[in-house]
Image (cartoon, rainbow, N blue to C red):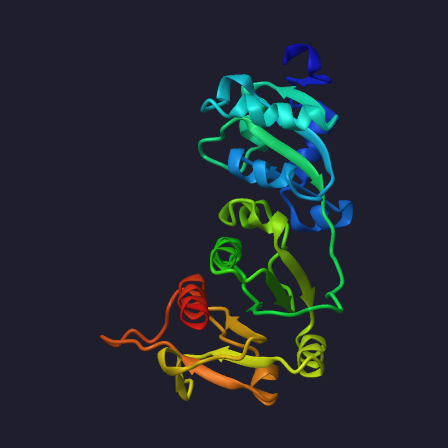
Amino acid sequence: MKNLVNKNITSYKNPEYKFLISLKKNRNRKSEMKSIAEGYRENLQLIESNYEVDSLYICNSLLMGDNNEELIEKFIAKNIRTVEVSEKIFKEISYRDRPDGILTLFNTKYNQISNNLSGPILIPDQIEKPGNLGTMIRTSKSFGINNIILSDEVTDIFNPNVIRSSIGHIFNTNIWSSTNQELINILNKKDYQILLLDPDGEVDIEEFKPNINFALVVGAEQYGISDNWFENKHTSIRIRSTNNVDSLNASTAAAIGMWELTK
């Protein structure tokens, strides 16, 4: 593997190191149209997707497990530029307390909502916490919901912490972003059943049977679902709660909602 490495980074003064550090800021990721995927599982999903990878960064002293070399070979087989990084540098560019020595720089892309949109949709509405959004993406995949549309995007889709909590499933899911009103117009035009997951909903989700084409809207824990959704034709569904618990973590509520609607 050593002779396939294109470059080594060992200094904090290295311009490439400084660039990678700059991508920890949301505005820099968006302006550069690049982000970082870190970890074995995340990068296994990435290399098997149609996203374009700029560079692979490895730190041999931090590599864990027997599958790392096989994964690195997948990148090399696709002629991905490979850079060896010292441990001190890798720990600085890493987003983790215990990095596993594999990190990539990839090109982001923001697609238009498909004209052929069909099947269930998960709509995270103004979800602020990257961990919650990533968990929703991973859970939606497990329940067979492959369409996710962020309404009035607050969290950057390509935040490395979204990628981490999704375990890389962001790379093989149909993910788009739109404003509330634009999305409502699209759903109405395609005759989607709009379901709002609301603690005060009038229908118990356990007793509800959705249409084949439904869109489940889940709001942020602090603010709930945006008013626009309530002003449009919809059905408000609730998750039964006991012991005076009046709200659930957003990703937990989404998981329960998706399970009940797809079981």
